[in-house]
Length: 469
Ligand code: SF4
Image 1 (spheres, rainbow, N blue to C red):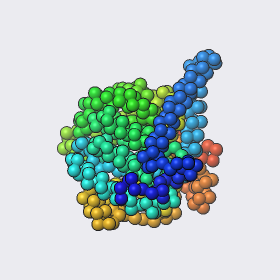
Image 2 (image 1 turned 90 degrees about the vertical axis):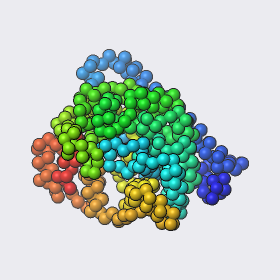
Image 3 (image 1 turned 45 degrees about the vertical axis):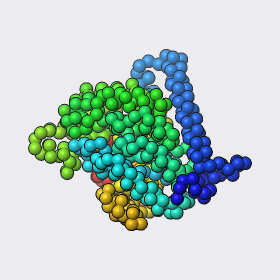
Image 4 (image 1 turned 30 degrees about the vertical axis):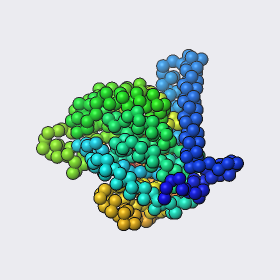
């Protein structure tokens, strides 16, 4: 069916409600235009809000003549307040998230075990046709569901041909129902960002861009088969700023072979200077079946040890706190109000729908995932089938495990009372010995009914969490 032929039933619920008040009926193009205008107005308001907050802070320092020590204490306290506020606010959001996995990259990085293929435009078009059919397959099932976030990840969405994201956004807007502000994120790599593509993303309604920076010392990246130059990174941020993207995020990797503390420091300083609002920090994982794994086995590359990684993580934490970021989750730091709404959906009992090759979903009690093979994905869809290869009903025992794992990664920790009500289990009794030992050794503590991991042990949170499962 052509998009011009969409009837009123295919327009999102909130738009329909708004339209009832209109005398003249809008076309789908006009509706999208209006929605985009609203988003751009919101962007300007956000910019103004951020500027006001900055000025207020400056005025506060000036009026109170606060000394350095008090300033630090004040900042610490504000950080903690924000951490709690950010998590609590986002935990209330019950709308769905939509994830689209783009399975293409320029070339495969040596450490990568994500699903990504290095293929030309023809394959991209074939994928697009299948993806649009998959979206259509969920139209009826998702009729009554309300979404408020879109995340286009991969792979590298920015390697897709020009015009794809705009077409995709139109398809999404005219199939699923959205309400309120939409957080619309796209992942880009510095070497495939162009002015034309960013303009297209703006027109598509994208309001959050996540850049795969990893490290600004590009020699270190080349060592692990990732080819981007500092000029690419500079150009990406220059264009983002020029186009007015305020809500920008960057991925940073630590624990890369030959990476020094100094290299980590320079990367963080650079991103703060570029006014990035959100930073995700990941430690390099050496996965089997990757080129990096082979290189290490052959002795060509020497991995960094745990101790060096912990120091890097601590440095990042310290620097970002100083720069006004809040660590709302083990790997995620944000300037308050710029936390990722979409990410939170993975950390709580809220549904999300994943589309595209290898995408995962959690919908109506079931967890399911698509095939990771591009050819199988296309074949299944072209034969009228969903490309789902695993589907499991999530039992309470699994939810319990997930609840412990995910909530302890959040800055607010695990709400013991909520846990007791939800799973009919008093964790302080069922895991009494483990919790007492962890408290005695300073790994966890209890505050206002929440079980939390001590800040200095956040980096090894996974090991602590395992003791409590
Ligand atoms: S850009 Fe990202 S998804 Fe693509 S190969 Fe490299 S690590 Fe993997």
